[in-house]
Amino acid sequence: MIHHRWSGKRALLAVTSMGLAAALVAGCGGTTKDSAESGSGSGANSEKVADPNAPIKEGLQIAFLPKEIDNPYENIVDQGGIAAVAELKGTGKEVGPSDASASSQVSYINTLVQQNQDAIVIAANDPNAVAPALKDAMAKGIAVVSYDSDAAVDARQVFVNQADSESIGRSQIQMVSEQIGGKGKIAILSATPNATNQNTWIEFMKDELKKPEYKDIELVTVAYGDDDDQKSFQETQALLSSNPDLKAIVSPTTVGISAAARYISSSPYKGKVVLTGLGTPNQMRQFIKDGTVKEFALWDPEQLGYLAGYAAAALASGQITGKEGEVLKAGKLGERKIGKNGEIILGPPTTFNADNIDEYDF
Image 1 (cartoon, rainbow, N blue to C red):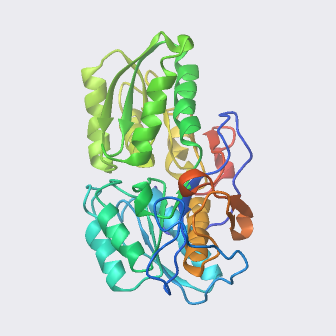
Image 2 (cartoon, one colour):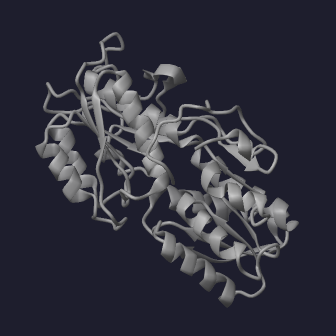
């Protein structure tokens, strides 16, 4: 994860060779500050009726709560969201804990409720740990949107998802299989054990491995770097020392893949162990160019935040409630239809390699 800026340089690309389903990170919504209850098809009061013609309220106060405040990827996402809120003549801010533990976000949610924010946009460290505090926020008329890593379905109104979770998970196996010739031992370097998105992707990765074409690939372990750079670095070292015949590491987290690349780039494993997963071009560029990594993938995180910002503003203004079938007007990203359980999908990721990485700046 990376800088604290809104570059706005790239729109989300069309479907890439990964074949991922369209649309990234989603969130539901529906209540305004004028009502005590929130309306949504995802656990809130579904009787709340959206008014798609309602104007976006000016002066909205919208807070973005990442898994941890120093997570570079989520910093980019949140800056995209803050830029969207500014477009809508509101004020956005980013607050969050310094660690990604399960309960670390709860006190921040409680403070944002006390501050009477119009909306909270959160990437949940643990879907259930944050649920009571988020439900309290919704009961007080605060719109709640989750992004990247979902909260419990009844504890938010909209979930803005990067892309179809199944496609993300399966494509990781497809990508690593191609790079190791369809055979060998692999390991997964994940974020935190309770991260909703990571666990969902990993389950689809495991399911993909059951297909006959992957019979010669063995997943030996799943390690957790807790979305901490140093721990992810150490976990990479441990994976390789304890599995001397490991062929590849798949890290579906931008903190993990960059830390793993840093270790491998200066080790005897460079050129021998494949590393792939999800990362940002700016953090991975040097590792693509020095041959440590051949290719990896990601969506545009700024656009993910931008979409979440528009969803939060629309919820807080009563344009949407998070009910399936409603349409979100998302500025320069156009319209997105809300799916089941209040999910909005951004769009397909892009695969980055030596041929295209210099075309991107995020």
